[in-house]
Image (cartoon, rainbow, N blue to C red; front, side):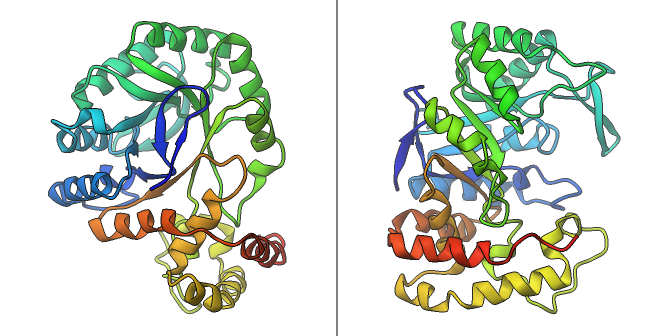
Length: 330
């Protein structure tokens, strides 16, 4: 495994992390097996993955609780990344979505952040959080100024309840506002070889300002693993139908490119999954790739990507092949 520092925080993280959204279960993921989830977490740690990324909203606390059970007795071996800002205890905040009978709002008021942190500490069964992210950024009509949110986070850091501050799903202007008010150690954004908007402005800025970059969905909801075929029929109610690349014509174009990399998977004796993750963590400025897993074999597959050292020519070829696809047909 390879490790990198998150910004200037002093926290060393594996470049491949376990994304624990699915472990929380719920409508997006269906029923989960808690024992299997704990085995998956333990397998990740044994494979050298030390960063586990979760959030209160993943199963409304279930993901955090399972992680707390799994890491009992080995807290010092784990870097916990969790979040704040999705609030469903009362009407404070701006409506975001409804799920499982909960009306979830975006709320980054200092008083709700402090409650969320205490709840996360209890569920995770720990007395500190390594990295705390603002999950989504506040919007009108309940738009807490970033300076107020950041002052609260800096206070929590001073108290020792969090070690590093991060912000997810941000704009460049958001990041600049965070930086004016305190020390922002990392951002977490969506990024895959099929969705590289991060490279336009935010990634160069973070690189210049020594801000860590954690990316989620690098496998584009498993499309880039080769798991879905050209004739795969998706159920009408699944989330993947909202992703343009999953539309039949777009998917066929992507799969043609993936098929053309058979010589690369043979060269590196690897799966498409490992090739794609290895390409992702090889991109300049990317600190960590967050890869979801629900079973031990999945996390072992993901972890193996750290062993691949892709040639520069192959990294360039992969980028050129993906760029040739252009934008997906909407």
